[in-house]
Length: 238
Image (cartoon, rainbow, N blue to C red; front, side, top):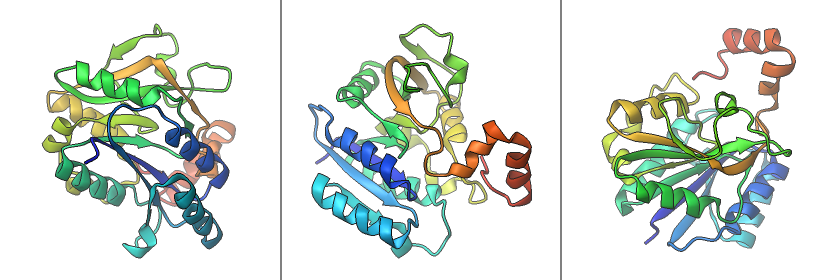
């Protein structure tokens, strides 16, 4: 029985996803774990590549197209299915997005951090760019010391661990179906429910923001166009 369930939601972006999968599969962990990729309506070509990768790296591939006709993104369903499975095995749930590359000891350090904190709800590894500088979505932590910080600020799901105790206290079936993303809400709920959240600034992961949804890069290059798309087309609901 896996004590750690690792998941990665994927929407195309095969090159970055391949790096994510290889890094996770190369992790050094001293506990049983499972790895599952949620394929959220990738193209047929990329779905076939994911199938090949699942045989090469021995992860479970869930094609959401076979489970729902709801268009991508299907983060809500991904979270619901993952919570149900983790609760059934009393396991930790670790989310790693497809534009993140972990180090071989990243996941072990996160698990150990959660184990060492009696009231841990969520533990996140801080994201950095290729130069090692803290980047989006943790710009607020750029001046923080490189240690693990207890925080009430929102954590992203770039690389974040949810504890069994927290998973028992929250029901992902109650997540707002009108939203697209839930990391801000869930991280705040963890604190509201009396849990402690931790950002590990001494445990970094490489992050290439929005690799799976390139249009979101407009937030930095053409912010007016980004917000026009966000509000007129109902995209990126947090």
